Image 1 (spheres, one colour):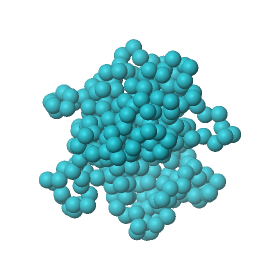
Image 2: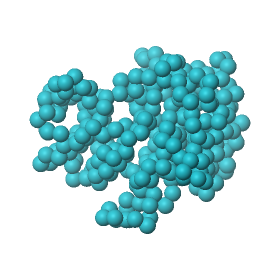
Image 3: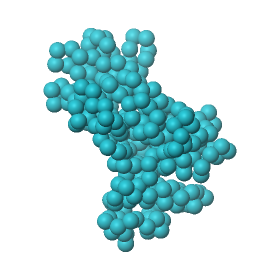
Image 4: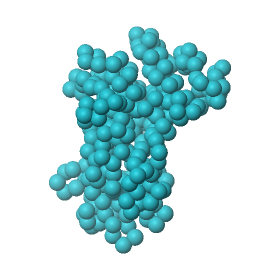
Length: 299
């Protein structure tokens, strides 16, 4: 995309249009002449983050999945490095889980389940189905965007690596990793955050669990978010905590794969379960088979 076009869409990259600040740069909201709303990431140091730009273009420029943010375009103009994405009106998941005191922003339990399923679906697809076999390596509530129907979209792929050690191409070994178990651990952390409002590490500091030992789901029951208690979802919340505990096992080999995690979750919340307050976003969760690649389906 041309720099001039993006500059016009952003009113000269005015700070008044900034919607996010990260380690790579500033995210702006912009509108093209045709009315399209964009999220435009302008890097502050194009040299320092050259690898991240390459990875985002390589991955998001090729992959299309309902739960992954698509890259609409990019601009490389002299020292300028700009990445362009769709604008999602509900912003980051972290904003909803940790709102400012002046904001009344509460996710319903069905919305939380829908978000957890969507993220698990995307990670299963990235790890086991898509041609690139991608490990995200930065899964957290700040890396999950929500569209107008609270459907989750994975973003921030700058730290991602590939699960294919036998095919180094021209990228070099630093772009590859042997397994996706860090993503599994980080996904467990997101589940804890969805159910309790706190990360696993924060919770173990105030429980009888030792961070170096296998977590006990019962230890976290009292930490369930107060907005869930009394709504009849306590048993479902506890089931999700049990899955989270499997994900955050201290040794990677003890953790399940994302396919196993997604299959377990989709068997608990399948057809007939209202996944979101908006009936238009309710969905039937199909499962993956970890043993037969021919059974994989894009969800």
